[in-house]
Length: 96
Image 1 (cartoon, one colour):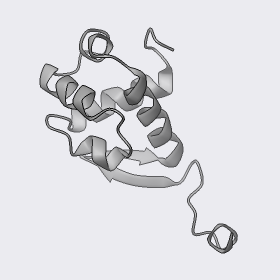
Image 2 (cartoon, rainbow, N blue to C red):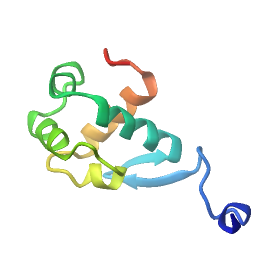
Image 3 (tube, rainbow, N blue to C red):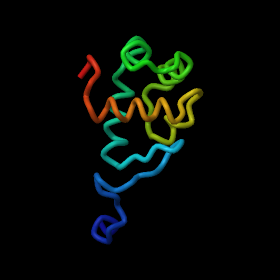
Image 4 (spheres, rainbow, N blue to C red):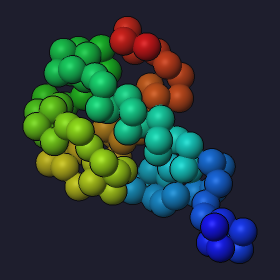
């Protein structure tokens, strides 16, 4: 409670961090992780067009707990993070 009252807990629109050059607010990170953890291999590969090695890393790691953890996966870099963030924010996947 003290941390919240003192302003130490980030809000939804506060920047959580920058991962491989992609900035995420708290809200964007939560949406991206939710998406990443519900999508299957086919959706990640064919619908979102991620590199197949990134797809394999994500599927093997599910459930992914943090954006930092996601960014550290094999072949998940700027391009994949941007694609996943955009898809989470736009809700353009078939599984929404």
